[in-house]
Every structure is written in C-alpha cells, then in structure tokens.
Image (spheres, one colour):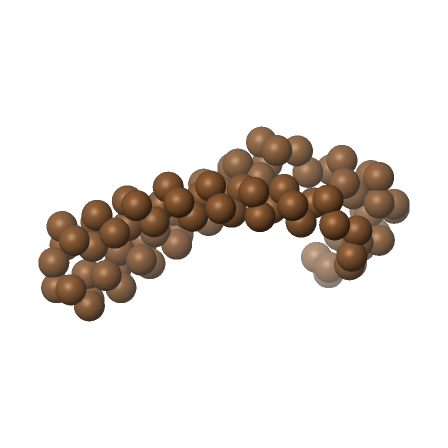
Length: 84
C-alpha cells in the first residue's frame, strides 16, 4: 500500500527531484541519528563496560554521521537511477 502510494504520487523526474527539500534531509538526518546514536552508545557500553566512554563515542558519532548522511542524501537526490 505505501509503495503504491509513493509510486503513484511521483509522475516525473522533475517533480520527484523537487519533492525533497534540504530541510527535509536535515530533519531525517537528525531523527535517524538519534536512533543510531542510542544504538552506538549501547553497543559501546556493552563492549567497554564504561558509560563515559560509550557516551564519548556516541557524541562523536552523532556529529560525523549526521553530516555524512546529509551529503549522502543530497547526492542521491541528484541521481535519476531508480526514479520514475
């Protein structure tokens, strides 16, 4: 059902390319990183047994992965492959 709605709502490449603005990519980056960072902190804590080390790793990872994801998302928005 969701896939059908997505495919039906995209009528051409220009419309699809313009449908996602940079601010949407920023919000998606933040929400995904919140989940990913919690996962990283938990794994780091389990491996090291030290919550302060786990939080440090999570803090660094939070910033670097949000930046990488934003640019990754923007590049993929310029690629026609797989779009209708």
